[in-house]
Length: 256
Image 1: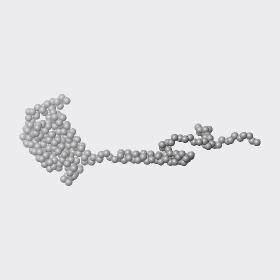
Image 2: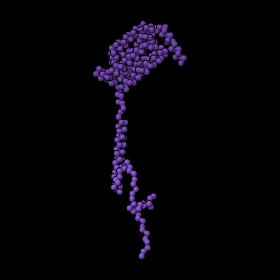
Image 3: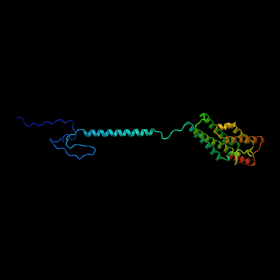
């Protein structure tokens, strides 16, 4: 009779940390506290895969929510916050800023403008450059009577700022005073420079109308041209007060 034969160990897969702690035959399962995210039936001893399916559903929901969140942020980033300005509006803004800079330069350097050369370069030519820029803007965009009311209102506002700049230019330097275009004290040299400037700016009255200026503004420029022409014919000398300011400005310029 054969002796006691030791039962061969059954292979249960790869060895693990709990390989030797095999459960006893017909051993009862330990009761686990119920988990909120996992539902297990009490009357089923083995796992039927329902919890795995629920986990997969939860993961799919999370993925869908993340995709929706990414799509939401991407659409928000693509939507423009502000409408881009048109090419015409950009040029108008540049022109208005240029007029503003010239005004500021004239108002902050009144004494230095008393010399004829500085007055011609820093005032008359600067204003003429602004006028030429405004003229090119109107010509490029074909602004006319059939233009929309919104664009016409913008053009009239720009023409008004240009006229105010011209008026300021004829009220500073050798022409400093309460009345713009007063040529009786500046002398014939300054009157000649101003007349040439106005003639180049607006050879005719209609030239200012084409710049969206009003009839009243165009008449004022024509009157200044006539007054300058009269001072040229008279060949007036600058007044003593104007000569004194010119001398002080030239002296300070030489010191600097």
